[in-house]
Image 1 (cartoon, helix red, strand yellow):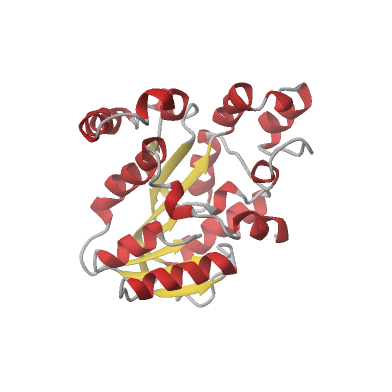
Image 2: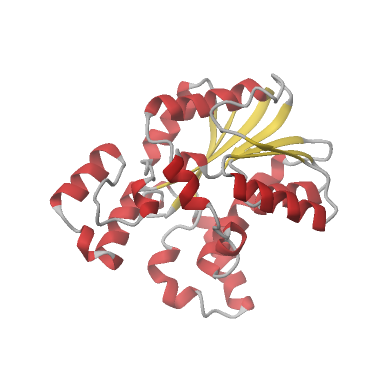
Amino acid sequence: MDALIAQYTGADEDSRLTRQYIAQIEFDTTMVKLKPYLKPGCYVTELGAATGRYSLTFAQMGLTTTAVELVPDQVRILKEKAAQQNLDLAIYQGDACYVPFIDDHSQDVCVILGPLYHLQSQELREQAIAEARRILKPGGIVAVAYISRFFIAGMFTQKFPELVTPDVYSKLLNEGVVTSAEADRFFQVGYFATPKEMEELVEGQGFKLVNHIATDTFSRYIADGINPMTPEQYQAWFEYHLQTCAEPTLLGSSNHGLVIAQC
């Protein structure tokens, strides 16, 4: 837990989602796919809110928003941003696996767009989804983001040759973790899932699968072509992406995936 907090202390999560088109497409896609469920009067909770890119957007939409974040430094930044933008939302420092301060069956939507990147035990992953189910109203929606272990394997071959070893690949493929001392701390505190595993995770907690999206498909592999695009070109690529991101054959190659399910 200390290593995870250290990893995100001082991290600029807002910038991560806006500074390049290959990251912006993750945010843009997530918001488009969540829009049908974010209705006026909706109560929405974000578990793992970081510095608030999503939670602040929900509050700007007039939704009753609760943001929960583990890292104290990120909570501080989120509170500062909310005050600067004169936004009213509930902000808590807390663990996505245990949110007793949120009432049972009180939320319409629960988004978990970061914690599953780091919950390295099956028990903790199940706890996070179980908490989402507890706080959701009957018929409520959960949206869970994950990082594909197949994408990570490809990233290592492209950018981290020191991690291209049988031991690293075996551990990643079979356990979804990277324990090599050669790896960046992000990978060492990470958990990398398979698309099938994430579907089984939410279904195992009583949810019914609604949608499964390759949030950025293979965009990061062609970053040199996407990042220099004009706004008009990006919009054309984004519209194409929205028409194809639910294609099952693209799920494993995408950096991020998004599972949407209903109570």
